[in-house]
Amino acid sequence: MIRDLYNVRWQSAEHTPAQLTDEEEQRARATLFNDLGNRISDHGWVRFPAYSPEERRRLVDVAHRLSSYWGRQVFVEAVDQCIMKLYLAGYGQQAGTPLLPRK
Image (tube, rainbow, N blue to C red):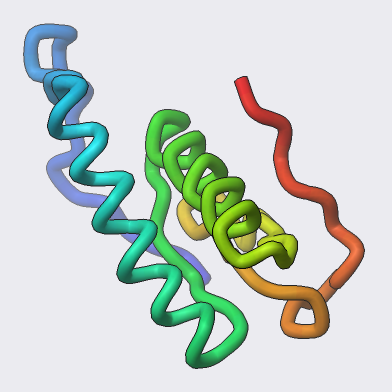
C-alpha cells in the first residue's frame, strides 16, 4: 500500500509533546489496566496503538500488571510499527511469545 504524504514537515524540538507527570502517568496506566483488561477478559486479546517507545513501555507494564492480577500470563506482541497486541495464551498468533522485558 502506498501512502502519499503531503505537506509533511519536521517539527523542531520545541514542538515535541510534554512528558506526563507522575500523577498523569498513574492515571493513564490505571485507565489502560481497566479498559484493556475488560477487553481481554471478554475477547481474549486486544490491539492498541503505541506510537512512541513510552507508549509501548506503558502497554508492557499494563500486561505485567494484568498477569499478576489474574494469575495468568498476558502476552505482548508488536503487530506493526504502531500497534501492540496483548493477549492470553491460545488467542495470539504465537501463543508462546514471552512478555517484552521491563526496563
